[in-house]
Amino acid sequence: MGLSSLAFYGMAYRVPASKRLFHILTAFITTFAFLSYFAMASGDGINLRSSTETISHKHGLPDTTEITHREIYYARYIDWSLTTPLLLLDLALLAGLNGANILVAIVADIIMIMTGLFASYGKNDGQKWGWYTWACIAYLVIIYQIVFNGRNAALNKDSKTKAFFAALAAFTFVLWTVYPIIWGLAEGAELVSVDAEIIGYAILDILAKPVFGFWLLFTHDSMSSTSPSLDGFWSEGWGAGQLRVGDDDEA
Image (cartoon, rainbow, N blue to C red; front, side, top):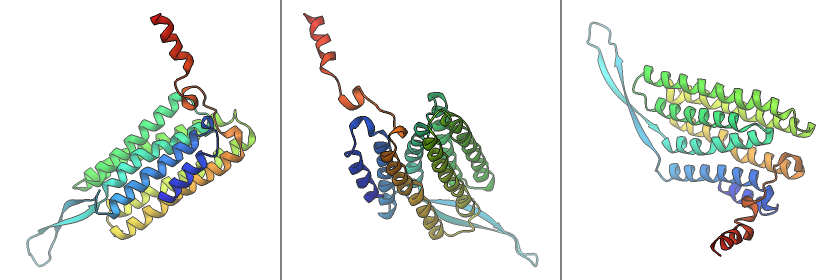
């Protein structure tokens, strides 16, 4: 993640400031992810979830209650709450999605991550799977906004941009669909060990962030039509002309 971030920042300086929007957004994605993984690797961003399990015994022995613990890497959810909205913004801007739909997609994304975190700390199946259900509903809203509305918005683009958006969006949402499957097997049903969960999420994060980023930026740099040109304050700062207006008023 760290090396990808350095590469993305380097790629940003190779293009004019007005064309750096995708570069900066993508570099921020891997930067936040790097900090999250550094926190988890150094022992931060980890907590324990305690849950109780009733064990039934045969031969007339009374049932007993066993308390189990599982590590919850909450730093991962902080990472996702910052990186996934930026990733959606990359896709939305590539498609030319309007502001209203972008806002709905990003809010739904934040709800998805928050409810996923609540589900991770659920002390019983009702809490875990209840929050998980809300997270899945929010995910469907994201898919509708980015895939369905994004595809309609991309129809106004040239053929190369339409094809690129379709391929990148499909790649992204195939990966994103695997995340809740891993969650269900790991933190949900606890059928998968914590180590296997970490490996699974790490592979997905590499594909969904650095690989996504390199694909987006290399294609972006070869297709000028994929990037909006942002002038004014974004690329030039506070202009001298605006400062002269204030001076004239004082005079």
